[in-house]
Length: 305
Figure 1 (cartoon, one colour):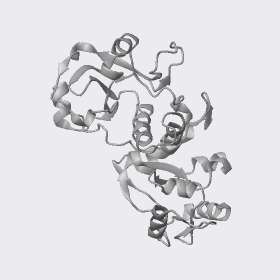
Figure 2 (tube, rainbow, N blue to C red; figure 1 turned 180 degrees about the horizontal axis):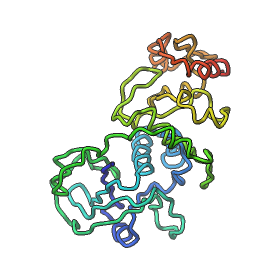
Figure 3 (cartoon, rainbow, N blue to C red; figure 1 turned 90 degrees about the horizontal axis):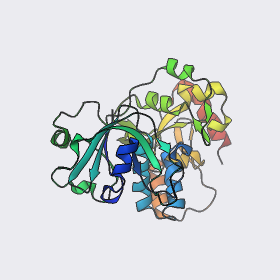
Figure 4 (cartoon, rainbow, N blue to C red; figure 1 turned 30 degrees about the horizontal axis):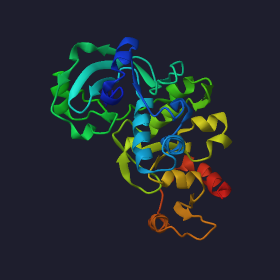
């Protein structure tokens, strides 16, 4: 279970709408339906394209908040706030994220999640939370703050990652590509749960960094578009990669795994100093390749640019 605070508009201007329609809503209306995006990186690029026109800092933090909203699940807890010192409602998520396109044009908060609200907390004052400044969506992971707001102890499972998935769950999926205003990867959630093992942190297979799970993706070694149905479901074809650059480098064929070591592949001069530093750190790094992964890494290395 996750616990997050979400502000329904500036100064909670959409709280009445949220309370009456039993949902929570956020802005960034230029970014389309979040169900279109299968990875954080895809969403971040969309935020840069549609909302901030190429800027990096705001795009990253906005994408993080939208990604958190998109991945809220039934039973997760939402604390609605007004400003940095007032609680106006606490509720439970009843259904996954949805895009509200039936509002009038002036409604700039189309990203919504259905929530069953307890409004007995309206206008509850708390000490000012500076970390909430200019942040619409934020995780509540402080037991002290949670108890201050609700009077209860923070559940041990709150914001603690995901539970491991079973192969039975994966095999029960009938169609892996489901049409829902664009194709979504139906198996991605289960593969992610398996790869990350329900932990708070995981290790990127490329750079070896130990990172929070929200900065990792379950990446297919062999490009998913080239996989058979069985290969899409194969645990061995999926590894954790970080969103700090490794997933993008691997996906675009800039790095490959050859003979248990990283092979850096660039077909043009490297001028960017940051990229040089990154590649120098990765060059010839040894990778622990499991037997079942070998054929997938070989395929990727052979077909990388």
